[in-house]
Length: 183
Image (cartoon, rainbow, N blue to C red; front, side, top):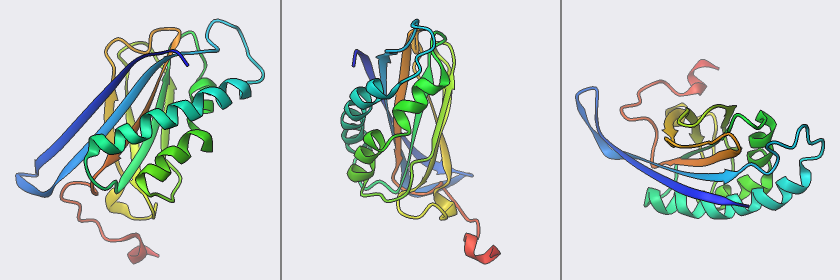
């Protein structure tokens, strides 16, 4: 894995709707900018060897950093990837949609649910909205939220940005009825 940079973003929301958010809503996002091992090679039929090599390294690198940046228990989490213009959507999908990547975050966050994800092909500076869900119960509505992230100079055409995001709680000022009330 050729790693160019790691970007860490920590956001604390103190008010929402004119009211104090208590406890504070904290989000941590950690993004890795790596060379796309498949870029410029034409169609690669078997992505498996690259996925087997890179996905576990990315998971082991990003998961503990994201949890540490959050600074407390993870209640919601998600993952994302942006492929530069010389790659394919499948390149990010292959890296993030494998247990070899996701299990690192599940273990670090003490989670059991599948990680929600987003991926796309885009030029440098493109943002992505990373979906988050509760770490143990994906039906808990208060934790369905999205965080936005981007790296101004990435992904370059031959790169991929892979990211993890974690939140300390559900949405600020959430007040929707539980899903069970509609079933």
